[in-house]
Amino acid sequence: MAITQAMCTSFKKELLEAKHNFLNSGGNTFKIALYTSSASLGAATTAYSSTNEISGTNYTAKGNTLTRVDPSSSGTTALTDFADTSWTTATFTARGAVIFNEDTSGDTSVLVLDFGADKTATAGTFTIAFPAADADNAIIRIA
Image 1 (cartoon, rainbow, N blue to C red):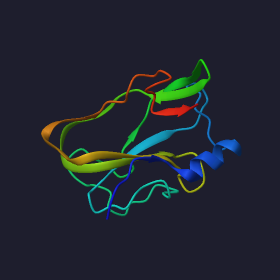
Image 2: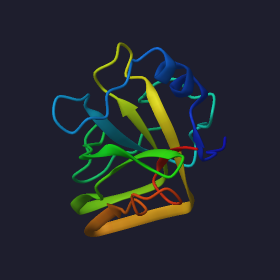
Image 3: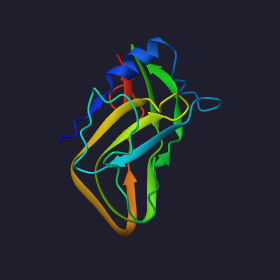
């Protein structure tokens, strides 16, 4: 099994079909679910799945709801991002994550994050820090 960081291919197609709304006000609900090293995730991931999703103290299935940063542009790049998200007083180990749109039929995936190694919280705060919301670093960029 492997987790490979990627923007999901199905998401790229769904953008052209207008299935995702990233506006902060009135947009879709995006969530981030965490996975064990046994998960097989990558560009071909099409939807949220509970298979190999982590379990542990202060983690619930489907993970956290993300706070969006309104889409913007810089030069010839369009971008959007999310605010950092945390699980407090958490005890669990995660190897990667899937961001998905909870408002679409089947909870369609947006992107897969690979943490590079198992990351563990033991009665502490587990935080996913998203990169700066700019043309070179935003988690979702279309150049």
